[in-house]
Image (cartoon, rainbow, N blue to C red; front, side, top):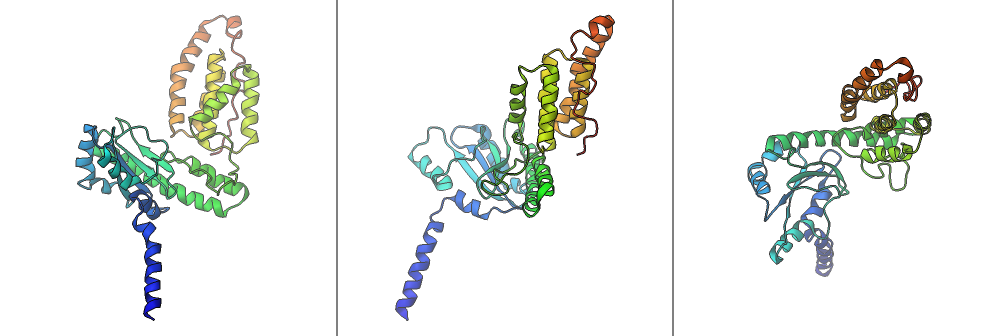
Length: 317
């Protein structure tokens, strides 16, 4: 009996060893959930005065927890030319893991899911200028993270167009990033192939570089018809199209139609605000210049008067 008990204790002890010896980062990841992500406070530990000040006022006094929405929290010291002691300190926190991709500035607040994927980040001098500003950004990211996880959960249990609709809505969350493979490894989302960030706009813009205005118009209409794109993706497509038309000397009417369509897809987004500003900056001056030209000159370079120039005025969001 005693022998069996000792054997069980040894087996239990050996099973616990990996957990007891795990880096703080791995332990924290295991605690992250759909409602409570992991928040990393990454700071310049031995060289950055801004990091030191923010850490003292915001983190060590636990002020950050007012904004963290109950998330798992971990401090990550980033050393410059670390000595042996500092290397051990970093390894104690991160183990052999690297920081999630997308972190480029310290101090920062990185919101990470249980797989270690960066889902949102507060970084840069403007966002991290003080505790209140950083905290407000962090709150928005976590709120969007929780909402996005709900949508992805619905998408995983839905099928067909309904599933794609949930995925598109999740991709449009403004302050949080979509995880890779949201439906599982190797499972297609059914969304358009463009990335849900500026790389999509770059991809479309590059393909249109050598196209005429009419060819670009047909390309854009076909692109949207062939795939199911989120609002953000559609606005990226329109932004790339508008830039091509502007650089190619398209008419003010065509530019207005494109920017108006881009704005109406989602007026509250960054792209929506940009489109509104672009009408003021690019379209109005061009309209005035075209109005001042003789009638024959005003139609010589426009590539069309705007007839059938946008992707349609019946966009449903």
